[in-house]
Image 1 (cartoon, one colour):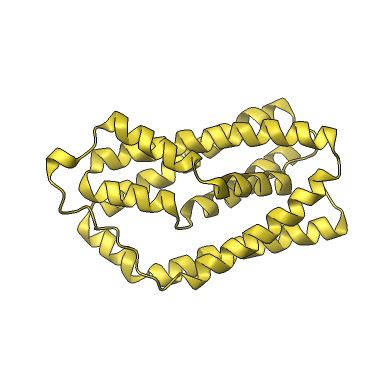
Image 2 (cartoon, one colour):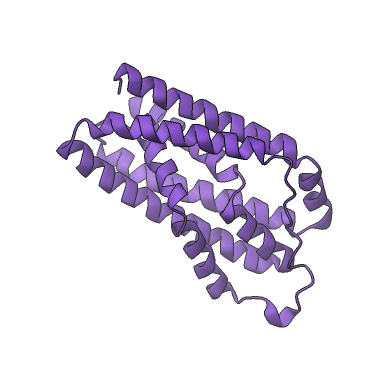
Length: 214
């Protein structure tokens, strides 16, 4: 049951994080506007990048926690502070326009092939250092100090599905004119909701670190 709760907690937090606007969203959205196929390839690249981060975070955190037990609480505190900062940034930028249609006028000759777009999506995901901090923070919040094998195998698979699934929805949605316009119309509310949830998660981490809990 504890493993299930940990997995559900990570899945929920990662879903919110994946849906928060950022460089990955912009890349997939801009690509999908030009070509639905390229947008889907980019979504798969995002999922692969999430898988890389998940495996690296699991391996690195476990080794660090065993070597320096106090680091567990330190990551919670600093990670929570960063998530609060990120939530505030998302909230404050809610009314800033997001130009997802910038590539709509590109000629077909400029559309990337699926393989190249996949690699571009992967590079966009793994080149963002903020993503690594978010992963480490969420893992520290929900994983036990000693991660069982079943959980270590399940977490990367779930994260891959979440990342790929969300950006697939983005690609399919924003490659159509009407849904794209609807998102832009309600962007402020969506961004504020995402920022609020991220900030609350950060507060949970900081409070847990202050109390010295697991």
